[in-house]
Image 1 (spheres, helix red, strand yellow):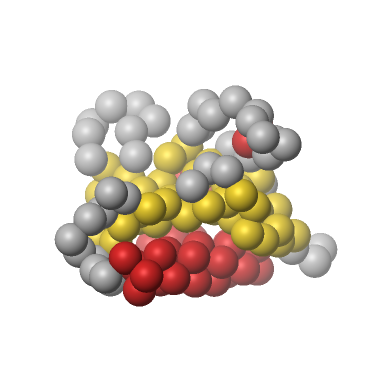
Image 2 (cartoon, rainbow, N blue to C red):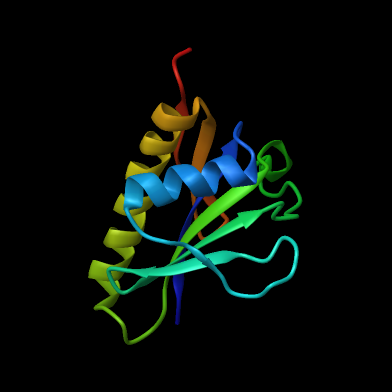
Length: 126
């Protein structure tokens, strides 16, 4: 069983977002494949962080995914952490990262749990 919390971002280009994440997380996000639009992935605190430029999700359940170009997801896979601890860590990291992205990239972000529930909305103050 897995759990996911995602940040959907409107504003910076994919390259700008990756640069910001590399600088702020002090880690090198590697592309899993050498294909265009393949996710950049890193393991962080027992979670998988993936950055997708052009996620391709359609609007669903009142969430306007099409308004956001990029997705950063934190995914917990079974067995890595205790379920309650892992879920809370995913949520907390996604909410904190959305605030960092808004501040650093003058972006608009939403944080979504399991692609079903909005946990938070962030807009940079220009």
